[in-house]
Length: 117
Length: 110
Image 1 (cartoon, rainbow over the protein chains, first blue to last red):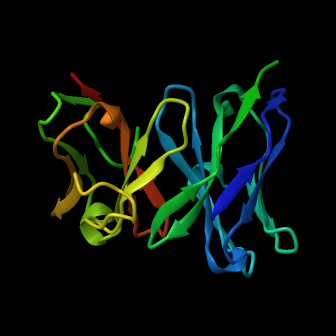
Image 2 (image 1 turned 90 degrees about the horizontal axis):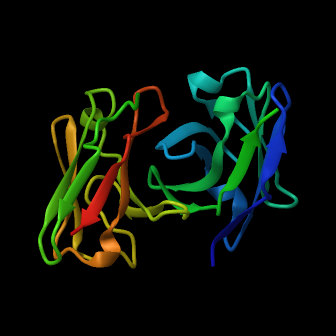
Image 3 (image 1 turned 30 degrees about the vertical axis):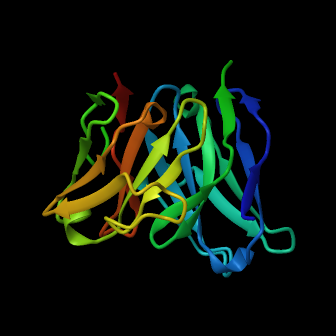
């Protein structure tokens, strides 16, 4: 069965960086694009970007250009999302989600990132 | 401000039907048949309910249906049940090769 298992909660200070991992299993890792979506407390879903696990190409939402980096490790079927220059507004639950038919069919359990001094 | 516009809340009684709208532009909802709908219960990850405007993934109840007219997509839930109470989000592929989400709609089952 398809599973996306994300790394645990993080607490970071403003200006720091955070790297969240998402380990995929139950399917061919390189056959499906992976997206990252975040959700601030009490707010809606916000698309951050996409990575092609096969070649590693990425596309980021304009809002996060220059601050986000998505990478993958095909040897461990893991994708990563690193966000730098953190500020309090980046406090959110971060999700990885697999793309299927231009939709997101499987989601990770979410990783809470708290930015606080 | 979200790119796609949804009502903040809708409500209905058990057994009734409700419809949630999702309004975009010709650069997203109106330009592609790539509208999806997600259900999210508190503290849980979103769940895909509808893809490609009107298709249901395996395992999703046929009480959920989707449609689109022009720049507005809609999710209809018939025969409302208590477990349908959740937040619902629409999303669309865009002309910029990105995904846009709606602001979300809170469904209350009275």
